[in-house]
Structure formats: C-alpha cells, structure tokens
Image 1 (cartoon, helix red, strand yellow):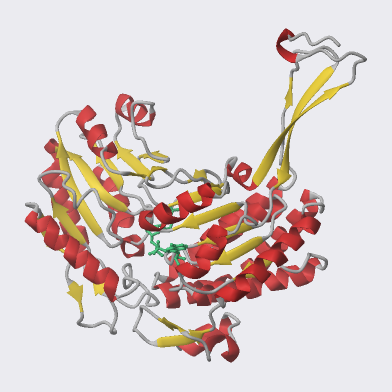
Image 2: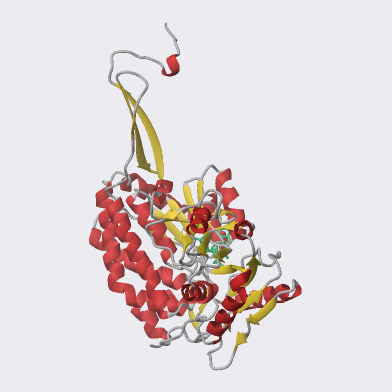
Length: 498
Ligand code: NAD
C-alpha cells in the first residue's frame, strides 16, 4: 500500500495533511507524510473553557450512559483496527502486528471501561456515633489533560480517555508532535462514536496539536484538575512540579530501566524468547523494554551465546513486510543517542555485540542492529534509559545482590525474574524484592495487559493508568456522614454543650 493510500484509509483528508507548519515524516523511509496544522497557543484558553462547560453537563449523565459512549468507541475502533494499525506502523515504524496490537489495546480498555461504568463503587463505613451512617462516593473531577509520547501514539490516549469519560470528565489530548496523524485519525473514530451516541456535549473530547508549549497550556491551567503526562523523566520533572504547584493532580508515566534476573534454574529456552521480544520488540522503544539482564554467573556464558545467536538472525527492515521483527527507530536523533551511549558503554569497559546502523537493503531511515553489551558493572550509562535496543548484561553470584542491582537505578517501572525456584520467585515479589510498579515471574517486562494498574515508582513518576482501581485517579472522593438520629454527638467523645 502507498503512504497516501494508508493515510486515506485511516480517514485523513488533504485538509488534514497540507497547509500546516508541523512536518510529519515516516520513520520507514523518511518520506514527508504531511504538514499538519498546529493549534495556536492563543486558542488554548477557549478550548479549555469549552471542556469546562462540557463538564457541567457530562458529570450529570449517569455513568452507565457515559459507558455507552465508550462502548460505541470500542465498536468503531474494531471497525477501524486494520486502518489505524497500519497508520501507527507508517507514522511510528512499529511492525504490523504491533501496530494492530496497539489498536487492540484501545479496544480492550474500552471494554474494561464499559464494565467499570457500572462499578464506580464507593464504601459504606461504620460510624462510631449512634444513628449515623458514613459513606464514600466518587464524583467526576473535571477536564483531564492527556500529554502522550510518540511510542504509544494512540493507546495511551485511550487508557486515559476511556476511564476519564466513564468517570464523567472531558478530555483534552496533546499527542507527541512526532505523531499527530494517528491522533487525528483517532479523533475521527471518536467523532463517529459521538455522532452515534447523539447528545454528548460539545468539547467533550478535544485534540490539540503542537509541542511542549501547547502541552504547557494544559499543565498550567487550574481548569484542568488532572493532567496525565506520558514521556521522558526529563519532561515529567518539568510537568509534575508545575501541576502540583497549582494544586492539580499529575498522573506521571515516565521512563523505565527495566531488568530481568535470570536465575540458575531458569527455563533458558523461554527466557531467551522473552529477552529477545523484551529487548528488541518495538526496536527497544517501549517504556517497558528490557534494558538490563542480571544473569547468574553459572549460566551467563551459555545465555550470552544463545542471545548472540538469536540476535544475529533477527529480520530488520520495513516494518510492513511479512517477517520483519525490527523496524526503524523513530528518527536519526534516536539512532545517534544509541550510538553515543554505546561509545560510553565501551569507555566504561563494556563489550558491545551488534549496535550498528543498518543502511544496506533498507530504505533511508534510522535502522540499527540491536546491541548486546556485556558490562563489568552497573555504570552511570547503564543507569540511564536509552530509548533504543540496547541490552546490558550484568552478572551476579548471590541472589540478594541480583535484587539490589535490579533496584539500584533511578527508574522503577517494570521488572521480572526467570526462575523455577519458588523461594526466589516469591522473594522477588515480596516487600524485600523488586521496587517496581510491575514485577513478573517467568514472563518478560513488556507487554502489559490492560486489566492491571500500569505505572511505576521513583523517577517513573508514581502514576497509575489503565486497569484495577486506576479509575480513582480520575475522580474526586467524597466522604459523607449522615445523622439520622435526634442527637448531635461529636466524634472522639468531644463535649461542646451550649
Ligand atoms: P518526551 O518526553 O520527549 O515527550 C512526551 C510528550 O511530552 C510529548 O507530547 C511532548 O510534546 C510533551 N512535552 C515535552 N516537554 C514538555 C513540557 N515541558 N511541557 C509539556 N509537555 C511537554 O518523550 P518521547 O520521546 O515522546 O517518549 C519516550 C519516553 O516516554 C521514554 O522515556 C519512555 O520511557 C516514556 N514512556 C513512558 C510510558 C509509561 O507509561 N511509563 C509510556 C510510553 C513512553
């Protein structure tokens, strides 16, 4: 399929693609895809006011009815899956099955949120006072700002939007400036769902296009009580304090530096498959990508040999082609950062296998061979997240040292262990084990399901999105005490008799 055909199939019109100031290039071959119109910063107050006005209506719509809108969104996404998935591949460079997988994740969170729309449960609480009843109720909170990263250009919006909408909140979305096309196409799908729904307020779902300055308008506005920001730790370090300073609620989903411990009892066949997918899937551009391998000394040489062999046979190239497993990095800057980090790793005493630019047999784009780097220690280079397929191999002797190494990085997103030893597995999951938001046994660190709460600790930001009770982050909690007695006793036995 030509680029134009992919763009048209995803519902993008010439008006979407021309006449603007933001150039969009495909990482597949560097072709110019569009010049997209950016949202003028001067319009942001109007858009935020529109969301605020939509909130006054949407918050009074019964939650199961709000769920109906998300159900329709899920239907529209099912119908558009192939076309939107192909556009994700064109704009981000993900292989076809991962582009489709991203849209499937959007469908899954819609299904989850529809059920949730009938389950926004509060508590009843035993009161210490006779004739009193206490309860906790969850209410809509107001417009939710969503700032998303390039690497999950549409799924992150859906994790936030599906929950925010059933919780009674409008959404304003600022996608990455590298991926506005998938965002515009997603908005078209949302518009179809809104049209079928019928009576949703204007301004319930809005899209703004631009760079950090457009995001900053959401970050700084007191009329955006919840700001969900996904991206680098650098970005979160700016955005989080700004939102907190105006008493807003930040939901931060930032960088990871995810590790796998491979113990002597591990099923190495399974481990190798999990390592390769975790480290090189999405060309190492997942927040949950595997970046550090902490291997027991007794199996290290065997594992490195198997991985080197597996790495040598990985098909690299056009992500649309059948059989390709590694597509391009998002741009040349990402490839340059990868090469720079490999130079640093060598200077730290690392032995680098792979990690070369690929220029033969591929279109112009930032194609690389994934790198496997044997490191003598967890140096400053290893402790940084490099958004590229670099896997550092570290060695351990004692199990406690493996856990200490795993935790001794600033980030705390995802982690895993391969072991058949119950004590090791349970220790890894215990309070003395992994300090990450996600900890897995005998599966890799990436590829989370939407049913669990997603997010991480430390410099990953502490936010949670998606499943479990992450919806509570999009609502305000109200504790109520009702006195149905004829007396007015005070709590804690306080006397205040007039
Ligand atoms: P990035 O930080 O460069 O940009 C992310 C978004 O933040 C973009 O929309 C950008 O315009 C916006 N932004 C940047 N500075 C801003 C500012 N000062 N004010 C307001 N908005 C601002 O990240 P990226 O390169 O697009 O994505 C890669 C990073 O995202 C990696 O670090 C990855 O680990 C992380 N990520 C984390 C998760 C997660 O759930 N934890 C998921 C996906 C990606």
